[in-house]
Amino acid sequence: METIDIAGILAQFEISGSVKEVKPLGNGLINDTYHVVTDGEAPDYVLQRINNAIFQDVDLLQHNIEVVTAHIRSKLEACNTTDIDRRVLQFVKALSGKTYYRDEADRYWRVMVYIPDSVTREAVTPESAYDCGKAFGNFEKMLVDVPEPLGETIPDFHNMELRMRQLREAVANDTASRLDGVRVIVDELERDAEEMCQAERLYREGKLPKRICHCDTKVNNMLFDQQGQVLCVIDLDTVMPSFIFSDYGDFLRTGANFTAEDDPNISRVGFNQEIFKAFTTGYLESARDFLTPIEIEMLPYAVALFPFMQCVRFLADYINGDTYYKIKYPTHNLDRARNQLTLYRDVRRHTPMISAFIHTLL
Image 1 (tube, helix red, strand yellow):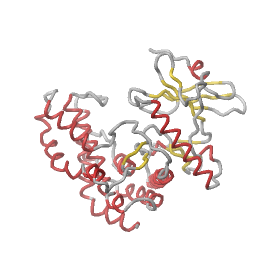
Image 2 (cartoon, helix red, strand yellow):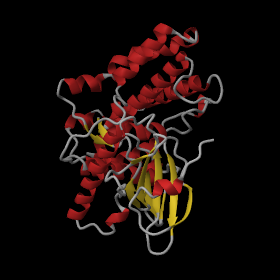
Image 3 (cartoon, rainbow, N blue to C red):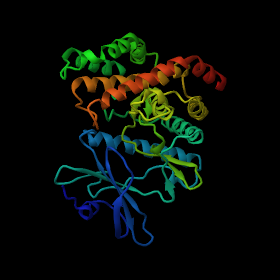
Image 4 (cartoon, rainbow, N blue to C red):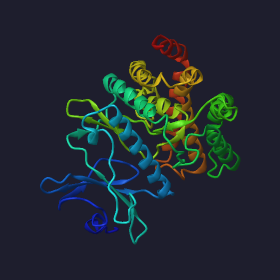
């Protein structure tokens, strides 16, 4: 069990007040997060250990976040927004002048000002889906004119061509001798692979832009006030250049599935039209002014792309012998893959409805 000198780490940052209590915060799967409670008038803080096994270039990661948060703050100031400090994350400088600290054990830490009277949500309802759509669309909108290029914190994170190459390598190697049991699924994915990889081709042809996107659009990646209004988007580690499909399609992959992505009972899997309509309404209210015609035209493709991509990733990991995703039982990744394939099929069945509804909003 590793021991962590929290007090020593906090002493490396320019925080105000004296620390009263430090307690775990949230249930994030990537970073370790703590609520730092202070005495008196000083603000509370959030201390977070950055998972540098996943985000290997911490300088790049923090540079992206610094640029994005500064740009959002300037946009809010230009609009005379009230209560700005609760509407954009604020990072505390370390004594080194950076927004992170590297300890003697090669662990990386950062500190943010805690936003008071804020809550996160876990359940996706039509109301919260609409709020999420509007907030994530507005997040992209504020970042369309970021003054400097950002890097990819996880290179090729949502690159469908890469994911298909990884699946084909898994099939060719068949390391765990599992291919015979999943050939039917592989064949179905290969049937639609060229269509699902069209975004990368259109980008190379100069027809489809990349924008600064959040790339992890879940309802629990934003803060709400006590009245249920969105305050700000959080968890900015994956903010980087991508297709807008990364924000639009990936939210619907999880939010508009009637069940969890690893539910082995595929009879419960299905595309929730009500959540889709609410999220899309909110998203286009914010984003339609800057989206190009081809981005809008391809929104139905984005809805199908992400369950397809996640099926490919789960299946490749299953064939490889479960080397990437944590599993709770031997066929966990296979159940995940079948779940996402079922959702993908249901989305394709609903494509005429999806296209027609988007058209009504325009």
